Image 1 (tube, rainbow, N blue to C red):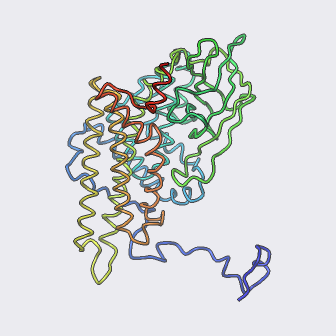
Image 2 (cartoon, rainbow, N blue to C red):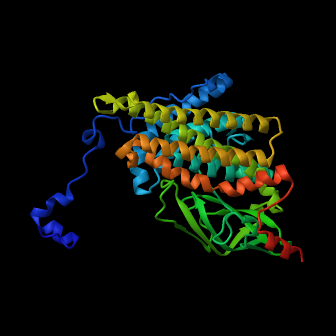
Length: 437
């Protein structure tokens, strides 16, 4: 058989027309199990965690769950595969009333951190990318303006952000400074009536279409980190999409280049005067990030639970085999433990007792257990475990960037290690010794 050498030859050769056949819908090709476009029922709350929630929190949970299952589940596989963002879904996410999370006033919902975390988990249960989109917009960018902005900035920016009428991103990470973000090199030079920003940022979620960019730069006069609100149409600002990701493919991560970008004085965030000021924001966002893998694991368990009862081999449902039940129970146990750690973290925060080490331990340990849970789920689904149509493969990939961002597993472990031992070990001993000489 002759193989067509190019697209034109395929189109001109009727014998090779099979190359152009559209794929068969997965529900037709594999009718024995239901794909994720019809999302499985929630069955992971084995220890009845809902009893710990207020009536209001339970209602919020159900409202978010229903929206995600109805509006996002049917479309997310297609958008994930294409690495495109479903812009038409933004108003639906805005209608949930969760943007702004714990922020009070300015059109924001003023939720407890528990309620905000529960909402984040319900979004992530269906699609991790949507949860990251909301987290960057709400728990990073909006919260920075709320905690570090002037009253004028809050009144000007937060109401439209809370409705998703405008979208924001949060630009801290740079090409040369990831875990070592405090060493960032982007500069802010004071000029008449404003500032000139010069530098690069990388891996910035939402940045390719954000209306506002919360940017961190080093003040060349004080050598301290300052924060700025940059408009998307600012002269000298360029944003390009990072391609070829294997996880969170719906999230539009970008490379940002700033060449003499002018920011007026009124858009400098007065509450950011050192890198330590970013910790006020990261304390909350790290709680939210810890709840993302909880939600993802819930969805993976729900999918595997339904799949094992539908799919048959050797004349019996896969759920009837001992080894599969053992794996399913192991996944369920992980979910219960993750939920309770996340819930306790929220309560410590609400009582103003949460420490950075506690937040870091929760994020590190929960994301580790979520990877294990998704890996077991991939085994349970066999060949279908590599198809995004059955959620688990997609979740497995989406967990990889979550395992890394907001502090890698190792960096978060070292934050907790420093807290429990009183000794910092972020730099090799040789480097630390040289820096003291």
